Image (cartoon, rainbow, N blue to C red):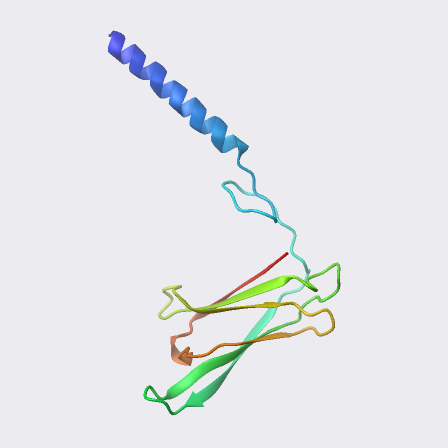
Length: 134
């Protein structure tokens, strides 16, 4: 009986400690953590994404995704202008595996940002992830 009471007390203490630590974790646009929080986007509109393929006659001939262009960017200083952008091409077959990643800075004068990729087969690309932060 004593062992059961001690086990319950120890379990309650451990649960309370873990719960207390988890309650102190926070989420914001500046950091990652556990929890959920509304994070304001740097722009109200939707960012468009397109990629331009080019044909390669190398040993593995075929089309390659060579340029990814982000469009409709709010490049004002109060929007996304000057912030870091990360673009990841994913695939194949919806696996969400990273095929390649490039980074750049959202310009403050043009509403587009183009990033150059190499060695990515266009037929393998099934998705794209875009993160703008800063």
